[in-house]
Length: 225
Ligand SMILES: C[C@@]1(CC(=O)O)c2cc3[nH]c(cc4nc(cc5[nH]c(cc(n2)[C@H]1CCC(=O)O)[C@@](C)(CC(=O)O)[C@@H]5CCC(=O)O)C(CC(=O)O)=C4CCC(=O)O)c(CCC(=O)O)c3CC(=O)O
Ligand SMILES: NC(=O)C1=CN([C@@H]2O[C@H](COP(=O)(O)OP(=O)(O)OC[C@H]3O[C@@H](n4cnc5c(N)ncnc54)[C@H](O)[C@@H]3O)[C@@H](O)[C@H]2O)C=CC1
Image (tube, rainbow, N blue to C red; front, side, top):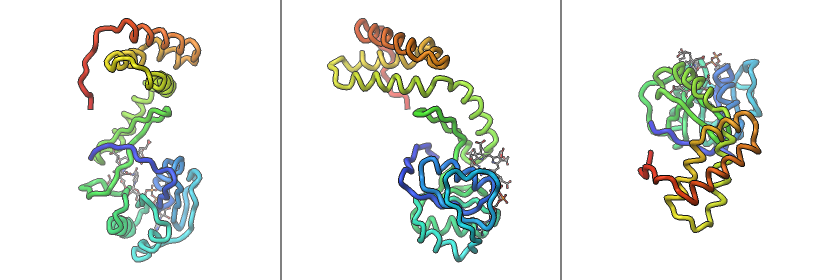
């Protein structure tokens, strides 16, 4: 499986199953998409801004729900294997993305796994074990999140500097070195994590100007994919 970021803004997502797992998926997707959850019962836990529809569709009712809602992604999170299987079949027949919460074996095209994520907008990190051991994903996510202090602010700051350079006639390698110097600067990161944004910007600008004008030795130019 290949990790990608998918923009679901303006899209609809249909979740079958209103237990804790359906709620967790609904909450996650509702930050961006219009989420509908269909289920006979709903957990106490929050569903974000999702719309809740109380119903207990059997396997043969599933296609109608999908055709009515017209989702981009369907989530099968009921505790009923037959219903989850019907959700997967109907989604696949319509070439929709499908996430099965009760199944992590072999996967067909169009099936997606929900990773454990850390967000510090605009930075987002996702960890998956490709379905093998979700608890490991969650543990590693917690470790990564401890290193995320100031990461969102850093990306915003470096993004601003990139924007300012976009129209300049600075040589490509100097531009890249200057940007990398700021991106990798521990002092800038620490100042941002401490909330000292003003000083962080000053230090970043100094580093940036030095690297741009004098240019440290050009680093490794290989593409890190
Ligand atoms: C394939 C996948 C499908 C998908 O949902 O996309 C899937 C499948 C299954 N999970 C199961 C169990 C558990 N899942 C969790 C937790 C999380 N599971 C998540 C994702 C995924 N789970 C996808 C793969 C992710 C990857 O690639 O690593 C996370 C990361 C994201 C999220 O769900 O939001 C979220 C962390 C949330 C957070 O902390 O943020 C815990 C731990 C806990 O609850 O504390 C347990 C109990 C311990 C255990 O069993 O391991 C079972 C057995 C169910 C049963 O026994 O009935 C299945 C089905 C099966 O394995 O067949
Ligand atoms: N992916 C993950 O992270 C995890 C997945 N699971 C799997 O996901 C499934 C759901 O987990 P929980 O929410 O904890 O289970 P749960 O049993 O608490 O909730 C199941 C929900 O599905 C609803 N439901 C039952 N029949 C339905 C139907 N015909 N149509 C729509 N909704 C229906 C129930 O009313 C209930 O709200 C579990 O059976 C398990 O296989 C479990 C733990 C973690």
